[in-house]
Amino acid sequence: MDTLGAIVGPATAFAMLPWVGHHYPTLFALMVIPGLLAGG
Image 1 (cartoon, rainbow, N blue to C red):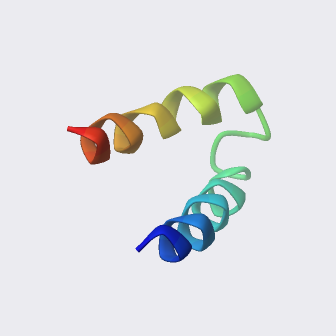
Image 2 (image 1 turned 135 degrees about the horizontal axis):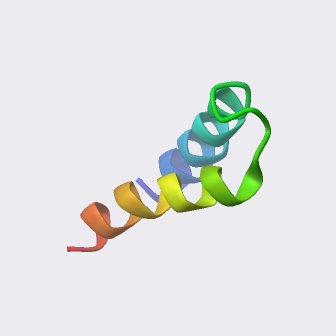
Image 3 (image 1 turned 60 degrees about the horizontal axis):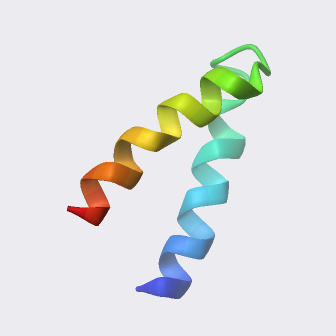
């Protein structure tokens, strides 16, 4: 599962870049949500 997360996480972030207009702070803020859900 660790390897899967290492692949899916960056791939998801890369896919979302155009959606957030290449605004990295917004992207990082959105990526906090699944991180918190996974850690719980």
